[in-house]
Length: 243
Image (tube, rainbow, N blue to C red; front, top):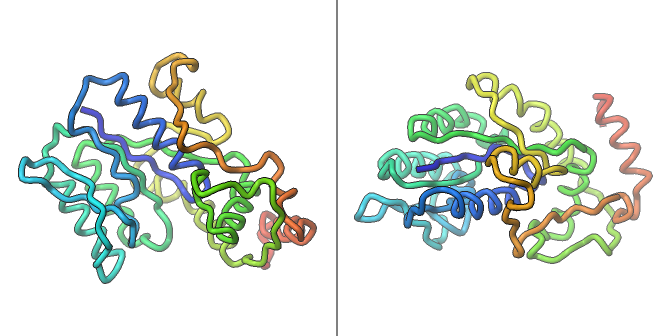
């Protein structure tokens, strides 16, 4: 049995890493017919919902979100995971954003009680992470399967969303520390090598995913029409001046 929660923030390659983690665990751990990826179950208005089957194992079904709030969904998912058969292997991801901050500690405690271990995913280049968020928001292409924006140029005007994400990046480590956590780190830039080390398999044996791949451009500024304005914004933001 293997239960892993991937902790991260938007534009860290979490979907890409979660898919590789699931594929590799499915290949190297004893076969578990109930092994399941729950993706992002604690996020409101996700298209899939975990439900507890009659045999006590969790299933992920496509169902419209009818919860009145993210908090209501979170309490439901905690209840399902807490009551599920503990022999079921599961992987999922959790974004400890300020949107769910009041329940982050409760979620982590519930996952610990359900025998989850944790890894964290990060990007070394915060500027590229923030630009990636702005471009995904501008184009509504959040996954590589949605299409690429790397050969296009866009005017970025959503500074507030990048400021919001940067705030969550700054606060990320403190949320782990207060929950007495120091999980292994998978970096976006070296994901395959880091997963190789974490899974204790040779890097050439890491199973990648042909459906999902890294979406970011090597130089994302080439995708931005107002690149000079964005560079100025980052100078102010990373120097912690008001923007």
